[in-house]
Image (cartoon, rainbow, N blue to C red; front, side):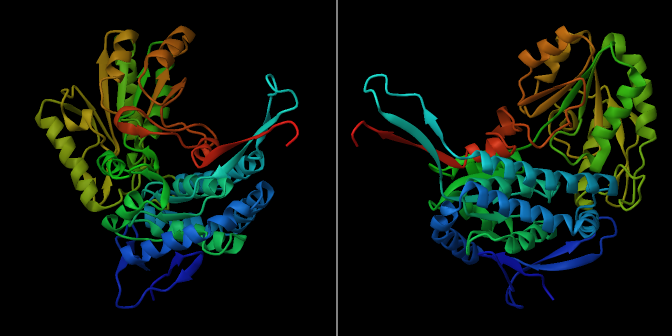
Length: 474
């Protein structure tokens, strides 16, 4: 039997002769579920129902919104083991990373509850020209939000869309990734019990082309998309006047100089490059090393790459699990082979076992090669040797992407210079670019997107501030 999608906050069983999505175990390839797929007609209906729910959502006070989010946390927390196992299966995410994502899901809802309580308006110091005038501003939900989320964090990146929308008082329609819809539907089940007004949300697995309506429909006031840069910018071009947040691809670099201990740095880099098969927009792809540190870091990173456990994501020791599909694994291996054919040296790894690409380290990769200049989104890291720290900053910026960068140095002046000069949304000083806390503003520049997520910053993009000025005697 197909699993239902959630239309207007309620499970809706699609017709047996309707479209469906098969969800596979990403390690074994076995089909583990069938999910009803919404078509454009259903998505249009969801938008209409969300529009009708706007008054009820806006009428919820800050405390009521926070309590809905807090009830959702309790409901999701009670299903922790089930959600982790489901994430391992449908996403191929190793057990250790799946547990971490569950914690982040809960934290994102909890932080959003705090933001809901904070969203109470404020008094403005006024009356300079007309004594006795009272001036305040209050937050007004902007309307229906449309969300599209990717496969790589199917719990937490859904949370980063829906929890701030609830905190802001906005109804929403969300399309999760076709490869990993089960996690989003589990969140929908919790939300359906948490006390949201009727019609306030829909979570609809669908094929990508069907979801374009979330960009083009004028009833959608805000579009937030996380995924590939090509798709994101195309949706942006079709979005008209609506507010848009895009969290797109990356080509994340970590700079390493001679002030850090190489073995510890290599271990941290390997985990950040190869964890979850490198399927993160801020996974380490380029390791930019100053000349004085290169030899020692190179040796340590080869050892760390070779020692990274890859394979079955259900094993406690696994760091690199399967990619989202075998076709993606084939693509990554093709990019590696292309680099080697162009003169790159394979230092460790290469090749694959089904959908599992072995953690791979390259050096001497020519500029213009895809494995260096585009987003690999796989367990591949490229060593890049530069003369000094200044050159490392220049090399880090030599990309069309700009999401996050890491700077592993003990020199505070170098850390400050990196913060000032790197063309990215976030500079992580003393660590890898993969580090993120969910309360932080997160987003990129250049082809990596526009806008910022993190509950506070997402809420700000979902409200208008309405001024009220009360003149003396009124």
